[in-house]
Image (cartoon, rainbow, N blue to C red; front, side, top):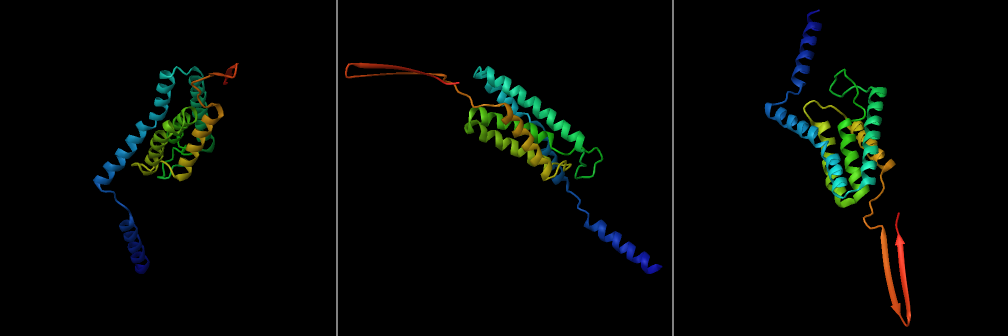
Length: 189
């Protein structure tokens, strides 16, 4: 009986040594990563809204609204219907898909789809950081599948409603030569 007790104590000691204890510096770093991600999730959609308003893009305004609404609805429906547990063991579930990531990628993909890669690349970098913050933050709220699903839901909700922006709808041309004149007009929808 003493041998079993000794083996049990040795095993318990090994487990306690094997537990990773974060240093205060690590905790501060992970907390900062998570907090920045919490705020950065709003940046791509906020920039999308500002861009729509500055360009007076009424069609883009409605497309953005439909994309945001669809993204939020799809994310929450999936979270509550799947109810996947969180990686760190919390029992609140609702890890799949990552809401922070889906919101950030929805805004980034709207900028890219509506206004091009010039707007999209910086927004996707911010969205990528948000996904990273959900993996590496203090509480390890998500795993890679949650992040990937969040990105797919966010991008998918944008591509359902968003069309590329065309600033010039009319194109007028004129050509002359050898006693002939041509006037052309093209309207782009």
